[in-house]
Amino acid sequence: MSPTPLRVSWPGTAGKRLEIMITTNEIKERKEKGMKEKIVQTAGRNSLGEFAPDFAHYNDDVLFGENWNNHDIDHKTRCIITVVALMSSGVTDSSLKYHLENAKKAGVTKKEIAAVITHVAFYAGWPKGWDVFNMAKEVWTEEAASQDAKTAHAAEMVFPIGAPNDGFAQYFIGQSYLAPLSTEQVGIFNVTFEPGCRNNWHIHHASSGGGQILVCVAGRGFYQEWGKEAQELHPGDVVNIPVGVKHWHGAAPDSWFSHLAIEVPGTDASNEWLEAVDDTAYGTLK
Image 1 (cartoon, helix red, strand yellow):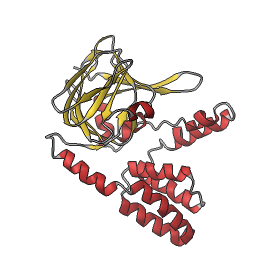
Image 2 (cartoon, one colour):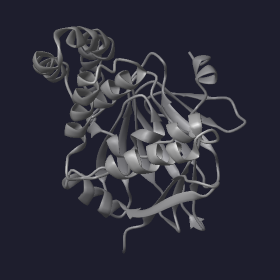
Image 3 (cartoon, one colour):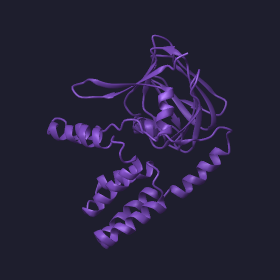
């Protein structure tokens, strides 16, 4: 039986959607080779799409679409280089904080970023080091407490938390983790969400069969279908998600959460990622 291809899509230019087809075996091979899914940036078009469309194109499609997706340098190293470049240039605004957060998501630890900033400060200037350290402290301040909570959460279940879900990070708010349990016959993945983390609204498609089953294994989370109230989830709860239903799922604001995501075999199966869950609506969940 050949692996079912997955269709991953994202917004492109002129209202068109860009798509790639990838099988679960290819996802496994990419992870073994250390490759990441395509990085997609829309900040340029969101802010300057009408005022400066060429600049927006260069920012989203060239800087991020091409340069950041070049695999000659691994993603973590590229994040560190970017922080060094901004610090050396004296840029300490929101763009630096974004790239510090990006570096943290790429696996840069508090000790590593402290060593990087200290080293660069000798060459770029001590005052710049102070500025960047003040910002880095905000980004890494919860690391120790978060690791303790993560360890406690892992002890509640028999399945591994896995690695940071970098390949699909653009479709999540907050940090998620992915542990492939089965990539043959039926795809089964343990997905873990830190407190407040949730995926974007999305829809599973298939011409026949398809859909997804969630089996909650630890923590507390939520599942919501478009137009309906959010459903609170606890270990042992099972959610059957049919094709064609717009929905999201993730952790509660104050709890880690893990569920098994079981891919229901289908023909022409694909996943359509949509907009992020509104912060205000999510904030009403307790």
